[in-house]
Image (cartoon, rainbow, N blue to C red; front, side):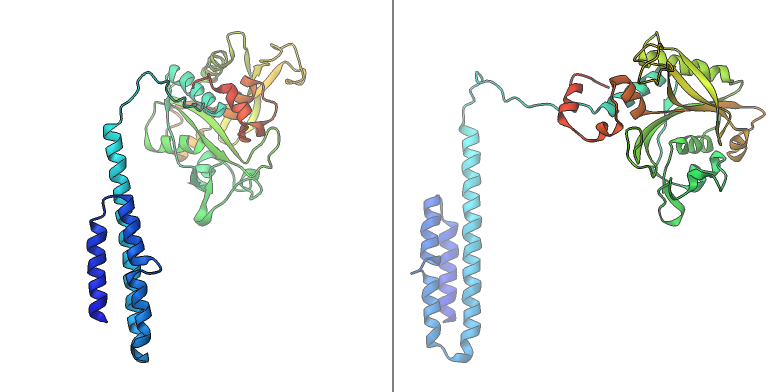
Length: 344
């Protein structure tokens, strides 16, 4: 019986290796796996064996059948691949046929606005700096002069992780790391994604994008901040746009300010978008607090600086007259197709 098994196995391997066409494969399959195949004949011979030998020989026959199936499948794939390669080599190409149209995607409006903001600041002499989305409390809060009892540190506002880490709530963490690593003068922007524990609504999202600017040098004053703001507003929204700053409070700047621009919809005359005030809030800014400089090893008696931050979604909504921030994240193809002709 063992000799018969070896004989059938050797014949099967030789025959399958010699197959040259799909028809040869079918013939070999019938010869070794069909109802009247050689392997099925071996199964019928099991009844003549002693009871104690039947399980072992049955397993050997099963293994032989599995091997033959694998050999047939492998040889079939080899023949198909050889046929494809031969067809590719001999096929004549008709160059007069029209090409296949491949629809192209478009940049997302947030990406478009981010790139335009970067271009504006690069034109004003800034460099781009980036940092990790996951940071520690020192770089996100402590180094920015944020007191331990500040509301922004609460679980209701910040996504905390293990071991004192968190998802950054602002890209100011990049400014801190830059001031730690490089001595003044510093002229950078830090674009990126931020995270806050906000419930999504027309003007808030738990994930959003910011661009913050930082300047540290000798003799920097609030006038430099106002000049940068005005240049940025006019390049982004047009030469007719005016800007202003209003007193405010942020832990890491002193004095602090809110930045406004004249309404891009009504040109400052008053409308629903600006709530008839003629002004739109753009972001926060201020002169870097000397306490922040001291914490990071920069002499506040020698250097001064300003920081400002704008929301990319906020500018996209103003630029494209989008009434609800959530529209930017719904990925509605009808909306995204409107930006197919724009580049960043």
